[in-house]
Length: 415
Ligand code: GDD
Image (cartoon, rainbow, N blue to C red; front, side, top):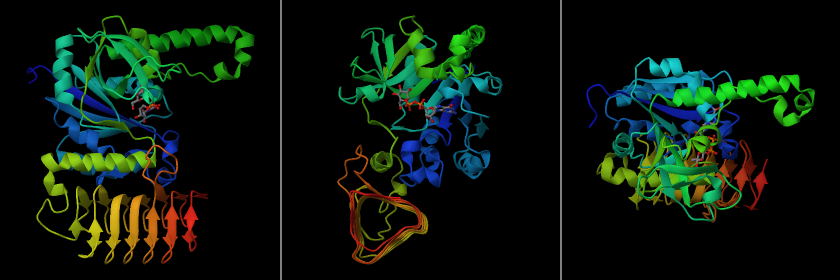
């Protein structure tokens, strides 16, 4: 437990509309951090994990999405969890460390001893209190949550090397071209307020470089240096890399699940992972967990209370059904996300797919995919208000909003 004078602040980086482009077409209709996983907005999961932080004074979401897009969510989650939560809007992207730095005065108002910093697009069990214990023991400026992944996938992340005895971060390289290590950065950190001094050091260096550049007319002509903004600071390349090996950063390894949510396919996988988390912690959120049998349920399934599911439908595992959706008699749903107001008519089948808001799937239609969550067409995605007529089959395809499909579609992107 924390001592009386300790106080923590949590900051969740939510990016903005120019980020999350791999999440299209779903991010056309809703900011990616608000896309529902296991029936709750993506960012709700790290927020509820923050509730377990001792002496938590405030949670900030920092991003450059429009404030109004987050207003309703922030007030409802703040009431639900009884934690003060605020959305702070950057006027432009400042990078993952620059965004934090731009609100340093506000963050320091509560005089925190610890600042938890979380990416919004990671899915894990967020072992924050355990990380805090380790962080206190190490006594450094920062502790990074890390996980072992397969050597083939490591290059998609920040790879790192740590001292096996002290856990000190010795070497850090962001998305390297050649393999360094299968230990990677999970995008979850604890820092002391000294992180602001480190970021300030980088912005000062960048300002000095920019001033020098101004006097060099040749450099000023170069396209990659012309638009460099001195307050744009990346946490990984600009802070973690140079501080590695200086006894300031340490790692805490999780052996639990961890995934990054960059694509719609991964959102189906992560939705199922969060559903499986509900079973031991909040079984009342699962269909059948409250004892009310609405249909034939297998495995972990979330059904919003306002959704109407026919008792002869067969649902699960890994299914999440949002508000006001209607699932007809004999429908079969496996590993999928059905968004608000969608309708799945009688005897339709949906497997490894996301059915968009207000979409309608006809009788005996099949919406399916291979379930390779990393492949571009490994899941089938229907955008908002797509109509799939009776008996039509859609396989491994992405369908943009407002289309009507009356013939079979396979391995296609329909714009
Ligand atoms: N507010 C704000 N402003 N947020 C930002 C900005 C910004 O300018 N830029 C990025 N973010 C947020 C993103 O929304 C995301 O939550 C987080 O910061 C990291 O995004 P990126 O900087 O795009 O990095 P990444 O996701 O490709 O990789 C990072 O996370 C991986 C773990 O998921 C790196 O730190 C990797 O090393 C790490 O493995």
